[in-house]
Amino acid sequence: MKSNKIKTGFVVKFSQLLMKLPLTVILALGGFIGWMTWKIPNKRKKIATRNIELCFPELSKLEHKNLVKDNLISTGKGLTETMLSYWAKTDKFIGIYKFSGLEHIENALEQGQGCILLGMHCHSIELNIRAINEKLSKKGHMLVRQHNNKVYEAHVDHARTNHCGKTIDKKNLKELFISLKNNNPVFYMPDQNFSYKFMYIDFFKQPAATVIGPSLLAQSCSSPIIPWFGFRRKDEKGQLYWQITVQKPMNYLKHDEAKIGLTKMNKMFEQQIRMFPDQYLWAHRRFKNHPNGTNYIYKDI
Image (cartoon, rainbow, N blue to C red):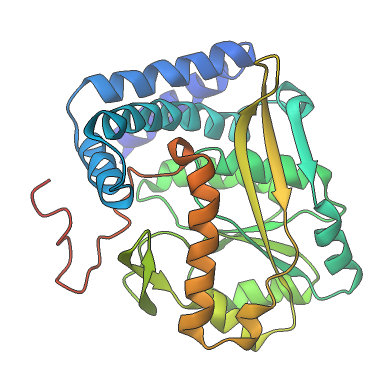
């Protein structure tokens, strides 16, 4: 335990020091880490390759290879973006963010019932959440999955609560409802593999274990569910910026049967991912739970 505490403390301190470098250097370092992940054989590369081959069957072998490369480079950048979200000063990144649709969140807060901010796991997710919270009149809380390394989790939770006020374990529905009752936005990313309270819903034409939580929440509380998305982009001069787009509330989750509503939700995620396929978390075993058995898709990896 003591050894883990020392090692984790060193990693955190080193990461904090890295965040003092210029933003371009930080992202370049992340890209290099991702490039090394692509060059060196490893399990995450194999998982990303399998997912991309399954979800984009229309691409050629060369296009698959190039997308895997771009995805792993983006994954490396996402690692440093996560560090930025935890330990960088706000003025290092907020100036190159662009926002649209934030009024949908503010309108919901004016109604006094909170709202659920439904997103997905693109590489910039943590930094995007911090950026949104910098713009809201009331900071959004976060539903999270805790790290296995409890020492690191303590550092991360402290960093997150500095900009979001509160983190909520993804299974703690009581705390989620308390946040909504107190008129807080709550960030919720339901697009990863789930092994409990799920349905198999198609995602890129693959059966994906999809949590039924969004449907249950929509039908059991009056808080609107508002989708939002954030991606890295470049302007006409080739300059990097992050674009956050907040959409109108998803009323269909309140009225449709669970399977129909969740199918529409996954289709919405697909549409966004297809615009920037390199920036999605393909290194995650999205299809781990499968009708043919756990790890059926990844059993040879």
